[in-house]
Amino acid sequence: MRTLFLLIAISSLGWAQDKIIFDTDCAYFNDDGAALVMLLQQPERVEVLGVTVVPGNLWPLEGAEDMFHIMDMMKRPSIPLFLGARAPLIHTKAMVEKENIEWGPVKYMGAFRTDPPAPKKTTQRRASGKNAVEFLADTLSKYPEPVTILALGPMTNLAIALRMHPEIETKIKRIVFMGGGVHVPNEEDGRAAEFNFWFDPEAARVVLRSAIPEKIMFGLDICYRAPIDQAHYQQIADVKTPVTQMFRQDLGKRFEKNPDAKTYVWDCLAAAYLLDPSFVTKRETAYLDVDTTFGKNYGAVIPLDKTIAPDATPVDVTLDLDFAKFFALYKSLLTKAP
Image (cartoon, rainbow, N blue to C red; front, side, top):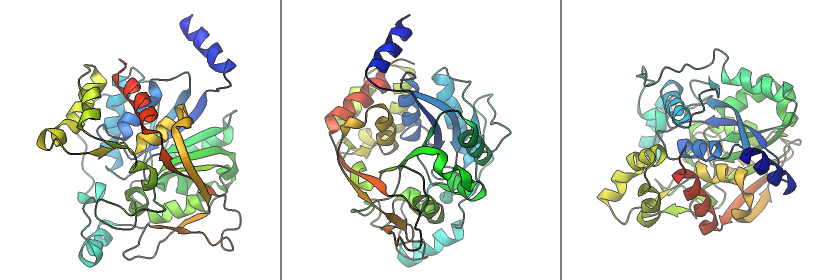
């Protein structure tokens, strides 16, 4: 009954449940895992139709285990998970090694730091037999309602789907993604590109040049405006739930070693936007492209030459936020018992 009243109240406010595909490069918890928790805590606002895994922070077989663990913890084992591409379109470990020598250091390599491992299973769950690209294409083509793509890693899966099934391009309701940077460089090592775009620049280019009706970007510009310090960390870590236990395990050591440390919530901003977009306070619209020339700017965001991509739609670039408003939502969802 309580759920029924809540749904009626939400409907009266004009909110509709968003159907999404959660495309992720995974991580133990921060930030992909935390983003998934946030969405699963508000099923009245968001329905996760499936999780699609892409290489980025981890290789897919490895990262899928973390997603399974989170879905089990959240008591949502029925959400299907699909493995997608096993590598970026062009970028390779050998290229990264050259980048490190020529234009480095590359301080965060993500999955490139190791060869794809044989994963150690921690759950009894298995990925669907259908691959992520097939799932994306089938869902976007056949689902009776428009579907949002929440892209939290490199865009390899979506780029392949757009190339194999170009008819889905305009059937996507919108893509909300974490990646890129328009006005700021990567603080981690000073390179021009943000990690997700750097890991697979060619895939990001395919998506930015596409005719997807709405593209909403959470890049470095806004992410660097949302740091988590020890005081913020402690507000969540002091609460005792299975979710906050993972939060402590993932972030606790950095604050124990350095009380002045800070970290960022990255993907959680994009997830929060699906729940309450009003925390975004500044944005701009631009036609964007990606530098795919192998060099020091590989993966950087550049202006789009519309003459070579006349059907491309503009990008809504988020730039600033009401951090207190965002953090209140973030904290409430991560400290709520599953």
